[in-house]
Length: 267
Image: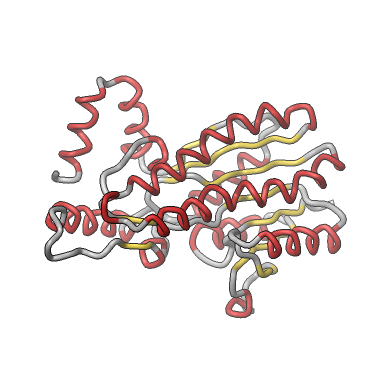
C-alpha cells in the first residue's frame, strides 16, 4: 500500500514542491492551506488547516485517517518569516511567529501521534532552517523560533523511540520561494537608530531568497530521508557555504564567528 503523507503548508513553495514530487513517486499526499479553495488545480489534495487553530488541526488529521485508514508521514512545513530589530518588533508579532513556527508544529505532532502509536510506525519531518543554528541580525525572532523547533525535536526523538516513531529536522538554506512576501517586516522607521543597518540587511535577505536554490532540492532530500531506515536527527539542505556556516560556528571562537556574520551583513 502507498504511504500516506500529510504536509502542512503544502500549497506553495517548498511544501508544494515536496507534495508534487512525492505524488509522482506514488505516495498518497495531503497538503494543507488556510484557504484550500484557492488551490483547486493542485496535483494532490489540499485540506483546510491553520497551525494556530487546534480545531482545524484535529479535523484535518481525522479526515486523512478516515479517508486512508492510516497516516505514515507528517511533514511540518508551514512556517512564517519575520524580520526587524528585536527592540522594535511588537510583542504580539513575536508571539504570533512562535505560534506558527514552534507551537503550531508541536500541536500537529500531538494530533498525529495517537494514530502513529496505534500503527507502531511513523515518520515526522520538521522543516526548520539553517537560520535556526545561529542568531542572525534582524532575523533574531525567526532564528529563535526555528532553533527552538530544532532542539525540541531532539527530545521528542528519544521519547518516541519506544513506539517505532522516527522524527527528524530538515534545515533548508535560502530557496526561491514566496516566503519573503509573506514575512512580517518591522517597518523602516525614519527616526529609528536601526534604519540604515536594518534597511541594508533587509535588502540583502530578499536578494538571497530571490536567487535561492530550486525547491526541488528539498523534495529530493526529503524523499531520501523517507527511504532511510534510521534517519538522523538533523539534515541540512542548501548551498555549500550556507551549510558550512554551521560548521564554522562549531569550530570558531564566538567573537570571530560574530565578526564574520557582521561582515556578511555589512554591519
